[in-house]
Image (cartoon, rainbow, N blue to C red; front, side, top):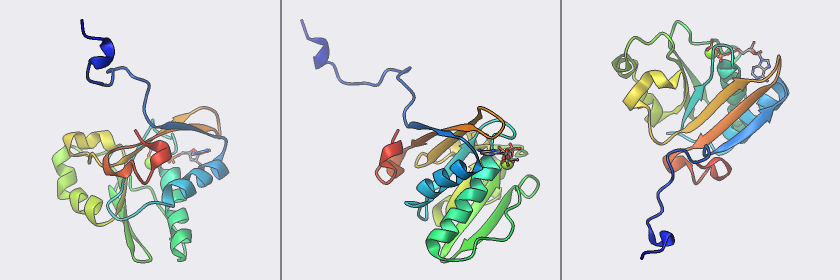
Length: 174
Ligand SMILES: Nc1ncnc2c1ncn2[C@@H]1O[C@H](COP(=O)(O)OP(=O)(O)OP(=O)(O)O)[C@@H](O)[C@H]1O
Ligand SMILES: [Mg+2]
């Protein structure tokens, strides 16, 4: 009889969540996380920011944009508004393009294609709030950042790097 170790290794469907959880005490700790995630970021990276209304997705985007500007040695954009109604805001950070999406009001995944989300993900760094709205168009090479409220100023972030980002984001590899 075959030993169970002979069986091909297939992850159980309910295996422990991949990636890594980070407890965030306050906005300063959010900045610290953004610095860690911005450090290896490069063109073609997509960050899928999820979590309930007010979880801190836009706050994370602001911190990330600030961290990236610092890394590139350029001034941070003066204002990083929530793209609630514009659905997308774009930034030039040194030689990098950054696109910040808020897809909450998206009516269909196809509307995101009309917004140019595929080019944004390929030609820049994309930060996407409400990424579930993209359905099957969500890039498989991406870093998931799931935020949950744990207190007035505290949050829990679950970070999982998928596909080609796993190598550069080793500590968060899914
Ligand atoms: N540690 C923290 N991390 C993130 N946000 C925090 C933290 N502490 C306090 N906050 C506050 O929580 C609020 C988060 O709001 P934010 O607009 O970022 O949420 P959101 O997830 O983008 O919501 P929406 O789904 O409406 O876009 C902000 O007012 C922010 O200052
Ligand atoms: Mg937001």
